[in-house]
Image (cartoon, rainbow, N blue to C red):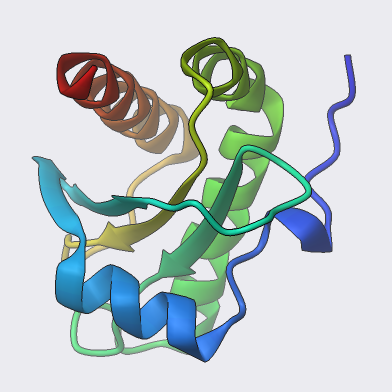
Length: 129
């Protein structure tokens, strides 16, 4: 199993990001909001992700960077379930993980919340079939 989360997994295209936020669906798994959209565009992997921690929520850059680093690490270690489901359903998605809490929470709690959000996303994709 490949545990890397390289550049091919990052959502960088401004057009795709604009389309995601204008046409995408919203999923709330407090304290994380997931914006996702199915896409037909050619991608190397079955998903691309964008991490967002608003300055309005966490004022200090080191807190925002910590949360984004934790998001990347948690997704890197647990991406297999999402990738397996998407390849089984033959779908490709773009999604954004947006942090909605006003304080920094410990890694273990953040991991629990993010895994819950990913499971909610998987069940939402199943319901669309």
